[in-house]
Length: 176
Image (cartoon, rainbow, N blue to C red; front, side):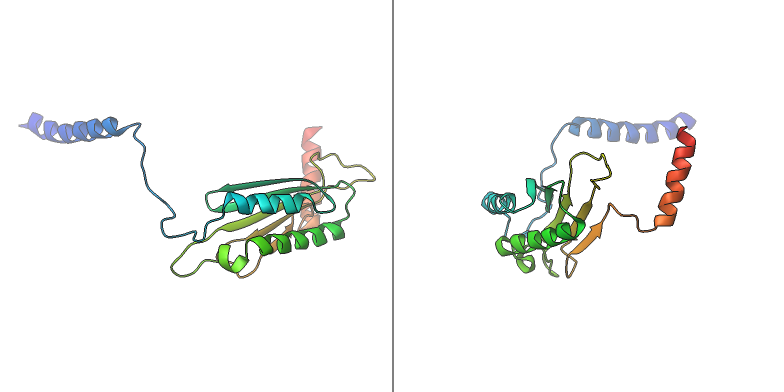
């Protein structure tokens, strides 16, 4: 009788394992954004933006990537650009993108439809070596579909300089 009580749950477990293993390796098909992302960002839109941004003054290289409803634009500015000019350049980038892909249409969600997110990463060097004449600067502009306006963050400057110095001092103390 006790053997029967063990046999029933083990049989159920064995059948679950058999069903799961038979489905291993099968692709799950579906569309995560069904009835969303309309209108779609096309390759032509991306090419237009890349061409326009690449020809902008103070820009060395532009990379655009569209994955999972996020348009990510990475901009390598000239090493000699000042922080103030980087902020102005970032504002110009937003205006340029807005002319091709209006924020209200492509980057603003509604109650019935999800839309794209926009992330612009702007930096002044691909190397992080600072010197007396060069200071690394990096800004990230974000416009999620649920945001009313874009936000800009200077990620190369500490929000809490005192804490940043304490952490640097602690790190230097442990590395020696």
